[in-house]
Image (tube, rainbow, N blue to C red):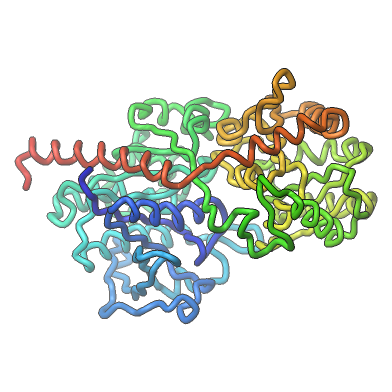
Length: 499
């Protein structure tokens, strides 16, 4: 197919800065698209955590001017680098006032009060950078509310700019819960005109909703799994935007994330004590013993070890687990947890660890190396999410032979096939209802399979390890959406008599 110019804008990109799955997508998808022959560039803010020397960033000549409505033109610097292990250029917008901070979005559990100005500025800087580079994108791929202003800007301020003639936009929603809701005065800074402050565009309860505007104005909208694309059209998962999303469902696509198997594979993982594979699982037993030792648990090979890695937040089903964890620990199991988040959860699970020192281990924080070791050393991996746009840990778990126990929502439902005892088919254990009882019963089911149907458990483990979720598949799906956007924009320009 025709090779495209693609500009991808994101508020976080691995390995430079990460708070969630958005960073994984923004750091990996461009590499796959580049391998398909497209000219793709990536843009993100230059936070303090992005070490210029470590990543060999080069300062571009000349400052970049960004119009900010009544605030006037604000200037910033631009640094250039490449995504590691690729030739994909990545540009960093540097502004000390907006991005010279230790954290990405907030501090001490509170969002920064100027996040509206910070990310409107970043969105406008993306547009100005394309002009500075003389890079004419066929598609600008934006992600979540932080860059959702760009489709609005493209259809308003830059609608008649020859540098963006024929440029379309794609908005990917990684988590609909976070929408970029601010005081309506942000409209002046956005500077697209108050005619866009309507209920069917940017306005919501007399405030501004940036994600809503992006959904309305983007040429296409994607989510990171097919199930989540269906869910967000319903009141239960739509976070107040279900009617808007359903109205624009004709341009909505679900594309499941891929996995970077160079980073997440038990055959090459640099963080685990012993490598292993589907055909030689000896190393997994050694990883399990190492994990038990790390969490000061008895080294019992015969007991099922359940791992959990993730944010300690309601979205992740932490409340469900808290309501039933003492019941679960009455079973002959062990459990380890890695995560940080809501303070009540950290205190609660710390108390549980003290109460069950031979059965439950907690590391309150995040360590990438420990996340890898939990994937490798666990027999089961638990994800009881209330909603999960895609989820990656359950996919990592399949690769590492750690059988997932998940709630059937979003990407968890798309990626895990429920165990069927009739033919030992499936790849994990699923439950539908977000209740402590459903979670407890499903864990009991999994543990019973471990102890009383061990051949079936071993088959489930093999089934999962044989499956791959490659980024090339996801990249091809995005490529098809880009193509539709580009062709539609070309046709629109042709009918309007534009070059």
